[in-house]
Length: 440
Image (cartoon, rainbow, N blue to C red; front, top):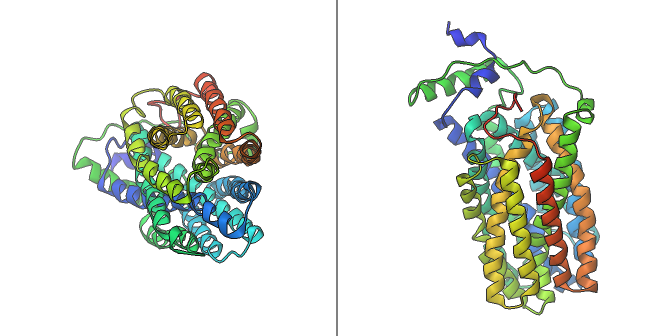
């Protein structure tokens, strides 16, 4: 019998220093899932200008449907986080993807503001639950010193979905009345990947140490030995059954509060830009075609932005990188709001999207790291979910500013949110670089 068999599977998995072929298969599956997740998440923003034209929606109506998604995301974050800890990461990922794909398809048949809002609420539930499952899985099943780069690579693949959705919208929306419905049909394509993942992806070995999980670890160890010697297993403190109440006590309450505040502000900036820019450009006098062209062009920067994060994400402290990126994004948004030249807007938009995706890669790596295994899904879900309440409220603030003062006021507001968010995470965030999940 292998001497390492006496150690816990999580300890054995934690010592793997390289990415094996098995890891690459898992990464491809999860990257494709995130690709459809982000594509569907951005679907309404690309459809909104055409829907507004056909249905006569006000800015408030656009805000209502946009906000509806965030209400769904709140529920999806909390419920999905709890389910990830109760039924497992894999089951949540597959089930949530099938659910949001069905709801996205239903959105294609909406006939008015109310039912489209209802469908987007349900879609938001599934999208966010799936995201919680994927982020938790990535944090638990890949080499600890490569966690940041793995998350960045997964996000880079995912951003291809945003680009594909932007290009598809640019082509399909001008085709005629009702053509925007095909955007939501494309968003439902995640069901195909979910069925493949159900067959290929094993359950997280940190969540359940079963005979099947043991076979997964032994397989990964054998593959890793082909390219390098494995270090000795370092037993860490065993995970103990956890109660959700622990999140309300030190040190996790402080982490939860910092995460909630940071995510509220940073997601306000992220969604305020990505969800509202197509509509705000039309309000500033640009045509719907120009607005969609802008969306397609700046989406090109998303994938390179996520890849660019690999240069810094494991080299510097993540909270510091997040702080610097937030302040830089805020400065770009201020320029975007005060300049009216289309070419300058495109350049500024490209830089903004690139830095946003760098920040997103860092945040998606950081968030699952700061909670213990048995509460990782719930901690991530609650922090993420609470932030959706703030983003929900900011949606109406943005609508009010755009209608009352103009688009420039929206970008001043987003700039302020970015600066405060950067200060909060930089000063109060937890240190995670180079530490095992158990140490953190």
